[in-house]
Length: 288
Image (tube, rainbow, N blue to C red; front, side):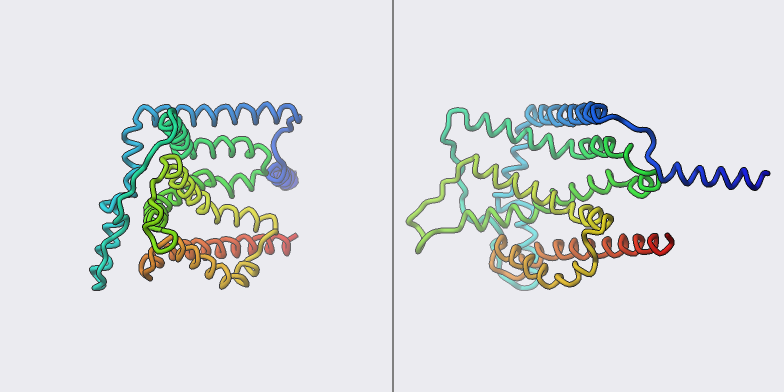
């Protein structure tokens, strides 16, 4: 009897692991989603308000990449000097920012605070999204994705830093120095809104781009993407990444390598993740 009881308990436990706990109606799901959205927006507003209060500090960070004293520019100079290459660094040109509208600077300050609030509160926003999805998952899926919030937040932060310290200063240097014709006919007077939109879009794009391994993980999990596909188009992907690095960096090999190597490593990490997921999926299918 005891053996039969243990067998029944084990089978019951397996069924619980395979079945989501509890059922909610469609309206209950909408209500839960509404509260998660409200909490996320509230966190963004709170962090954005703090960023607006300390706007002087925020703007010192935003304006920093346009200076030749910026960390990236100084590292470029040191690396080139180490290899015996003459270099003046980045942002050698004077970049003048102007404003055309009466409320322009105020609106730019507000939107910058909101974007800063989103970046700072991103881990909490991801946690709210995870809290909404988590009840619908099986117990074994919850265990497998237990560190998803931490990993997504970490990759987003690394992507933000990558965009800020590498992509932004190179892009500012290249775009500010780009001229039509023989040069001199058109003077670059950059609108403050244009500058901010460029910086924020690059930084946010970097954070989103570094979520690629997470996207690859879920696409591989449901069978829409395989490591074979990623390996097949590896060379094409490398060419695209090198072209992107060549466009946004000055015309020297060292700068292009600094930008392209992290992107290539990210792609290789995605292949590794896809291979692991595909291997586990095939193993479960064979066991079934």
